[in-house]
Amino acid sequence: MEPSIKIISRLEGSETPYWSIGDKAYYKLIVNNKKCHFSYRDDGTCMLFVDGYKKPGLDVDNAIYDNKECEKLFHIRALDLDNLIVKAIKDWELKQSLNPSTAKTFEELIDEL
Image (cartoon, rainbow, N blue to C red):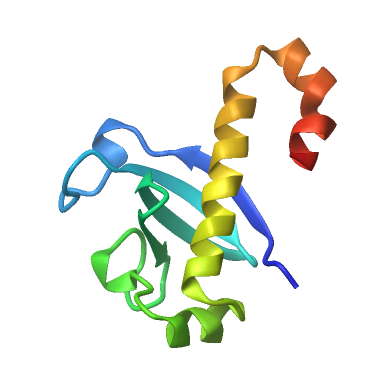
């Protein structure tokens, strides 16, 4: 069964972590009712951070590095979860780019894509 993924927002400016390297985008999201953050530059460069896994908030210690950790928390391999989150982010970004009336008209169609 695929995990439930809900994108909340994209972090901007001072919201991004001080330890961030490069031009990654950071997103606040919920995966299977767990508050998370996700860094994303492209399909091959991303990292999931689970809020409270080891420390509160967006902290480098909360990164999920391997399949054992990911399967324990989400019952799915890390790469598979990353791919599902990237798809959810792309869908969310598309919806954010639409004007409100267009978004309402095409919301169900976009969700199917």
